[in-house]
Length: 417
Image 1: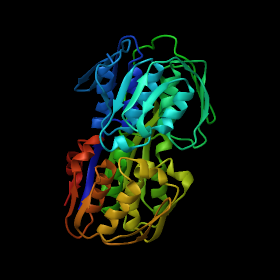
Image 2: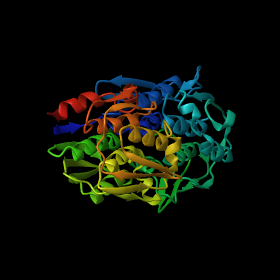
Image 3: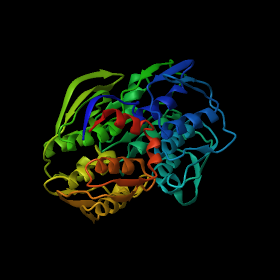
């Protein structure tokens, strides 16, 4: 079995959320080409529609007619998307909207206090039992604040910057962790009043509508990472991934793969709309070496840790991942999800206080594993299934549709016996 061929992916999920939100600030129609097609992005689009914005889905993407936002009549359902919930909370606070945000069972158990506290310091009125969804926003005037992130969270940073667009004075966020910088890059691309100086990002109140824009999104790197992992472990594979997001804050996965002895080449890079995109070539390798991921590295590969855990089980030696406790607050407790599934398949995975240790190489046996309702876990188990001795049954594979409903068809197009 091998993967062979060319791959083009739907647009990056993080960029899609942000482009949808910022398009509402334009006077006129904006067009977002090649957006993420998953349910997470649709949650953001649906919430904005409820706030009076015309969001029309076209064959090529979204057309958004910016308009003055209005209070939604019903509850804004963010589905499974923590990005939608946190970014929309900050944005709607800044726009003076009264709303209640909710989510599915998984999202309703994820922490919201990390945005509630700083937004309250800005003057927002937020009400949430135990600092979890559902969360109610009542309109109050906001003031800019200076805030240093206590945890590595691009979602918190982005929520505050989006709130700052409607706050009096400057909102200054210090990011000592150098988290993903998609929000500030998109602000720059659209001409918003943002300044980036080292790890300090400041935003001033937006005094009027922005110009409508067109944004053609590069492919989602976190989805590409799944196919990179697959092609790497299937020795005779060779795939080309075109027009993929190559923001340096997303490439920690490739840096670890390089240490493992992978064969991944960046063939072309260009900067469009302040983001780097390009083409990758991935070829299979015979053996992989064990690795260590430090706390400082985790921020650049947090979404890819389930994949790296699978690769660690197939690598020579003991691999260790530390400083990854934020995984416990994702769509599932990913530290537990990874350990349970890998050990079910015959790997040797031991949970540590902030991550895990994995001894390889192992041979995956077949069996039944759980996605835990988490798209990243389901994708990682799909990677493992390609090299297992017998079939691997993954429950609730449908959850992959949160980020990439085309996943199965894209994989089938590349697979060769």
